[in-house]
Image (cartoon, rainbow, N blue to C red; front, side, top):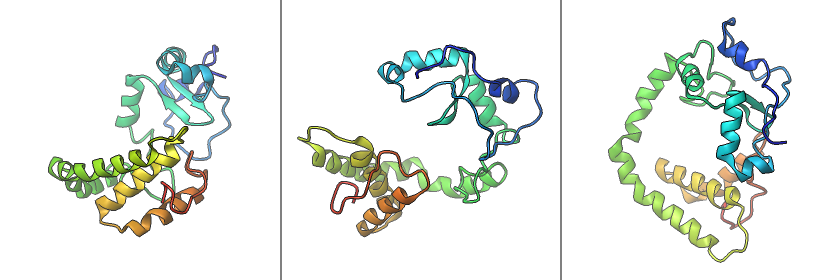
Length: 197
């Protein structure tokens, strides 16, 4: 089922119209999907599909992504209104993305220096080396599962390198991610000595 032709549900008007203040909760009522990001027609022409969904349902629900926001006006409303749209959705707080202002602001100030232009520029060669090594390991293969073979190991290896972690942490981190509720999409089982390790 690609983008539905019907109008989207009441969620958009409730959250963005003249409605009472809403707080996001992980215990949302059941919603009928407005679209399916994995549908063949969506995958074949994503720009057309996204434009179609945005035109009829700028805040759309899917089972895969939950809520997707397609237009800038709604995106800005979400970004600038932490009272209505809270980042605090889990008892396992992600620092700083799982926080709202003013708590988010204090943590962001503490973290930002580690991502200055100078530090990121200095780390770029390491990122390129990691990406090149992973791409080289995939060369000549007939078929590649990009999440398990490239994206996941790149994320783990680059984060370990950035934080000064040992290469011995790569495989345990991948295995830990695979055990998380909902798993890590496309990661599949860990393979000893494989690209994910």
